[in-house]
Amino acid sequence: MLHATEVIGAQTFDSLGNYVGRIKEIFVEPADQPNRVARMLIGRGQYRPLVARYDQIASVVPGRIGLTTDEAALDLYRPNEAWLAVGKDLLDQQIIDTNGRKVVRVNDIDLSDHRTNGNTELRITQVDVGLPGAVRRLLQGVVPPMAIRRIQEKLPPRKILWEFVNLIEPDPLRRVKLRLSSQKLAALHPADIADIMEELSPDERQGLIGSLDEETAAEAISELDKRLQTQVMEKLDPEQAAHIIEEMSPDAAADLIASLDSETSKEVLGEMEHREAHEVEQLLKFGPDTAGGMMTTEIVVVSEDATRGEVVDYIRFHEIPPDQIDNVVLINKDAAIAGTVPVARLLLSGSDQRMSELSFEPLLSVKADAHDKDVFELFDKYNLRSLTVVSRENHPIGAITVDDVVNRMHARM
Image (tube, rainbow, N blue to C red; front, top):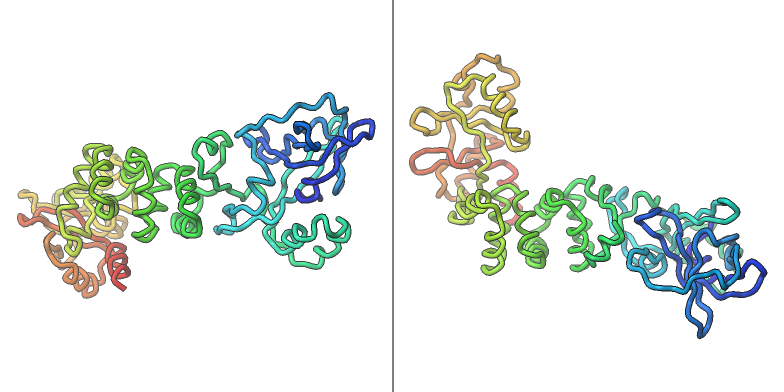
């Protein structure tokens, strides 16, 4: 086991034993091999620095690098944004531990050495975020390498496997060049991603959002507090912001757009698809302290004469997400609300049963202009999971879920 701090700064000698210089940096090419040290930067006084490829490294021990060739065969250094610089981009930098679901600071990098075709390849295995790495950095160049190793062996290790590391790269062009994988990050629960975002600087936060797909970004932003939601969205390009907001539920989208300044909200709405923009604009007409201001328009409405089998087929055909269906809303021939059926009753009923036979009693609904206090009282009195919102003509136009109630009450605490 080697460490990046034992390689960076090491003396380098060519195949004849001649001194070439010191290692100033080591590079990984994520697009090629995500964990292999592909190149080493060799500084040599006033001369232009050289670069040794992975297949030109003969041996590596703490403080000393041997090459398979002479100095003349080495390339001159030319900066490349597609290279990940271990010293500059990793050491002392914040990264995301997707396994531990948190942001940590890198103290050192663990490297393994592999003999391949007469040369030695170094590969990143773990990231040291504990006390041993910090002590190693502190004593580097002051205490002999073997003495440092004896000291660190007595300290409790704290390391992250390289496969669980997600880098934070604010620069979108560089992020694309490095091809940073966000699959591990996207697999986290949105609430965990939101917690991670809260620990980052504004630029790092924007970089993280830029690395996620739009659906995951929407779910994560929805978990942030209103202040951070606004900060994140106002820094995004209006088109990107629109695509993310389109992935949100209409009520969450409306709340978020309402928090933006008027110019930004107008630009974002202008970039959204017509249907989604229209839904949000309709919700924005309701006061924030009303039932209409709390509701989502994503509801399932069917005829009270429909059978359970027909309704299930309808839900399947339209691929309605399960988390969108607490209750199925029933309407009569005049399109007025006639009842609601909890999803649980659909599961326990026969295929030929009429929806009117499964309707929840008593029939509960609330007008869109009702005060949110009235909504809270209904949820508390009847222990509801969902409540239908109706127009003045009694037509169902949306629903309020228990999550909406909890979030609204939490915001007032």
